Amino acid sequence: MERMERIELSDELRTRGYRVTRPRRAVWDVLRAADGHLTVEQVTARIGETGTEVDLASVYRTLSLFEELGLARASRLGDSEAGRWELMHPDEHFHLLCEVCGEVDHHVGSLVARIQEHLDVGHGFEVRGVELTVRGVCSRCRAAA
Image 1 (cartoon, rainbow, N blue to C red):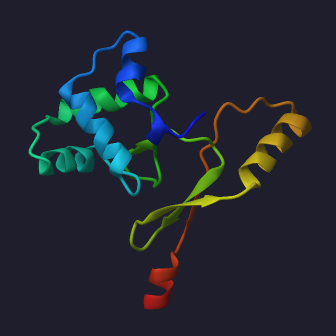
Image 2: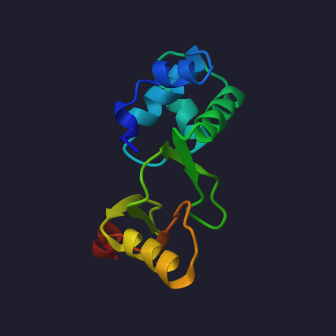
């Protein structure tokens, strides 16, 4: 799958029979500009910072549609965490979740592909998606401790 930042939302929605609405465009623009994983409330707040008014229910509906279309994904990164959203991406990384500051970082490497191959070859398990989250303490919080 190509990088979602390069996808033109209008083309994706129209070819699948959906209209391009102001809320959908606003949510897409926030996800594209995000430097991390955002809660629904954060997406709504960032849209508001642009001077555009989109209610929370519209943001929920839009994110659900984007997930259904394979354009965005939600991750539950903590036990009591609400879902955090990001653009869809291939599963070549896993999430590093700092239990002190809540920062989420992506770690890219070949480990996820090796796990998928192991499950397929060694266990006959067809992997359709990977959601790996590693909890710990980030380097900034370790240095501050």
